[in-house]
Length: 71
Image (cartoon, rainbow, N blue to C red; front, side):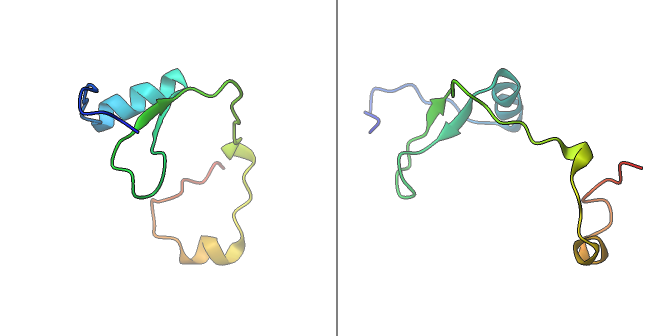
């Protein structure tokens, strides 16, 4: 759990994007914990989006512009 003496940094979109680019992300101990901790996993997974299959039903129901076509 975080203490009251912990440094508080506002997580703006810019801070979050920079953190993701560095391979770290914020996470709480539990759903009800308001404190966030920066996590830097030793192993990371990468999802290759250019090979992602979009089912026809999803392609029909998605809002225009939410998913870009790779073709």
